[in-house]
Amino acid sequence: MKTDPIVAEVRQIRDEYAAQLNYDLLALFQDLKRQEPSNPKPHHRLPPKRVTKSA
Image 1 (cartoon, rainbow, N blue to C red):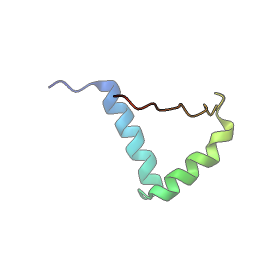
Image 2 (image 1 turned 180 degrees about the vertical axis):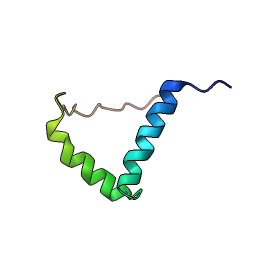
Image 3 (image 1 turned 135 degrees about the vertical axis):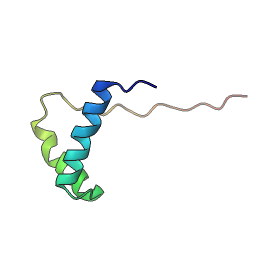
């Protein structure tokens, strides 16, 4: 199977970022939440969808 260079680059960047925080999931979450307000894309919460039972 061929290795996709874009996927490989994303994985490398993700690994480097996680290594900076010692692969601590809580630290990763807190860092992302800290950075969230500076993201230029708006964040919207959609209302929940009603789930209907199927017969």
